[in-house]
Image (cartoon, rainbow, N blue to C red; front, side, top):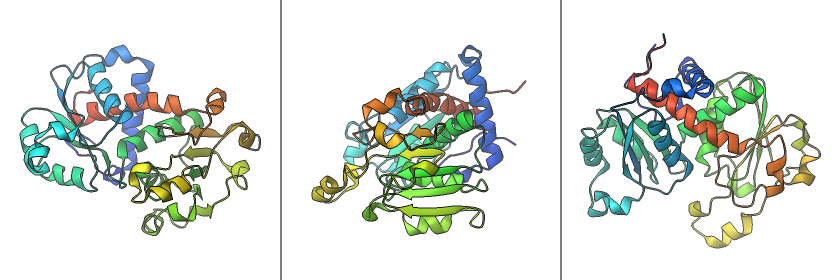
Length: 311
């Protein structure tokens, strides 16, 4: 099995065995970072962000720099030739001769997939519209695997914006590939998980899905609590955003009824959906989750570039 030269556009592009290879390498990196400090020496990452990002962009750049490689790219489409009307196809043809691997974030769904068709280097989807965010999924799975020891037989609650949340779409589709998982979907009616995603889930016969608008009624039966923000940038009507933005706020009072070993996760950025007082709770792992994003992206790029030799 080899991941060398592959693209990662959708989590479904990788088998569960390939996921395991990424996690195993990430765990080795966490144990001894110095062993990996020069494995990408001479390699260049193209960081192409057509949409704002903090964690995804900087964690990719940190990952490449930590492996001894270099980074080029842009964090604002207005400073690229896109502002002159250049197509993604032409951009990636050129970038393929400048870099060894590329990560692309784009507001239009399917843009990274289109780029991969014209690229001679591995393309990684850094998030496309409300569609997919596969490296956030890798980060989330590594976090769950680290703290829970397993990716199956768990009760996972997704709370907040389940309609537009690409992190939720990627993670629930991937967790459905592991057997005996239970999903609790907590959202306002207007922001429910799209029906086409529910119908596309794997292991339909071994998973259970519960939908509710009432957080308090289910919080005592959750292993993983995955909170998301209500995304202002996805709304066409600001009045709708204002009406829904404070639908759920996790605080210490609500946590009194939760399991003592429940994990609290969040892809970040946070607005006000998790109170700052929760940060001190031992169950809150969202900042550790963000840290793991660097290591899993180091592992992913090392495997796609073929620079890691498992001696």
